[in-house]
Length: 344
Ligand code: PHE
Image 1 (cartoon, rainbow, N blue to C red):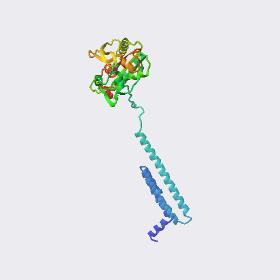
Image 2: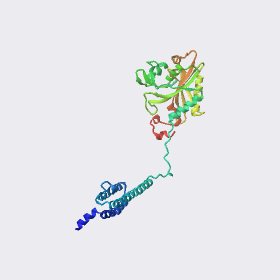
Image 3: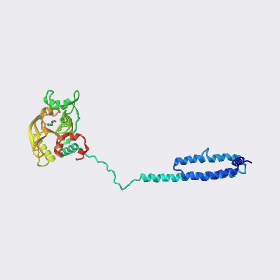
Image 4: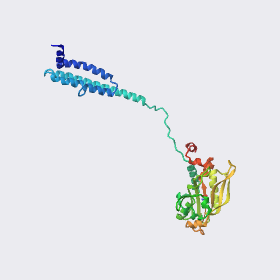
């Protein structure tokens, strides 16, 4: 028998099969121990246990053995298969444990580090001013009403005794929305809306945005006004003065210097503008317009001017905030610069 014939015969024999198995075992063990990751392990599983793997190949060779040899070969094959399966699983486990350790190490959180503080919001100076003014008037018994920012021309002008050809309509540089509609140029139309729905006596304030075609360091096309008015029997100019003095003292302190100056508004008669002395600037600053409600205005609001009288006043909230907080440019209030807003 030639050596080739012997090898061929041996490869068909039980001895040959067991010998092959014996070399596969340690090789597999070695390779599995070296496998660096899940992918390498999977490749090894296919190489040894897959359909065309090394063990399946030997399994097929069993067919050539006789009945006495088959169980022996089968048992040996199974032992090897189980051993390799165990090795693969153990390696898999130790690899994932290592991966977990590595992840825990890199993703560790130091719970002793200071946290990131959420930025807290704050009220805008206009909102602060509005609240302060509102609470002063509430404490004097005024109630709060509101009106729309888009007004009819009638409510914004005609009802307030400002006729079509009156120069005040130009004076206010109105922003028209559509035929008959205008962005309200002052909060005074809320007077009429309130007169139409309330029965005197009443004392009301309203605050909100107003619009005029105007823009520089002291004028903004949108700004804020507060309107106050009281209607009843025997309401006099003395009441108006008293309310405004009390208000300005509450806002600027007991020693505030106030001056009433005769003025003109179509919707009040007589009318006065009110100035506050600014120590910082060394001059009087106009802060509000006021007067006794014109009989025509009361009538347009469905109130009998023979029976009732009232006073009204309007002030610029932005102007008061600038005075109070020492803001030099009105536009700062509307630029939403957080460095500015955080100061309040
Ligand atoms: N509406 C006036 C303005 O916008 C202010 C005002 C209100 C004056 C009420 C008198 C009475 O300037």
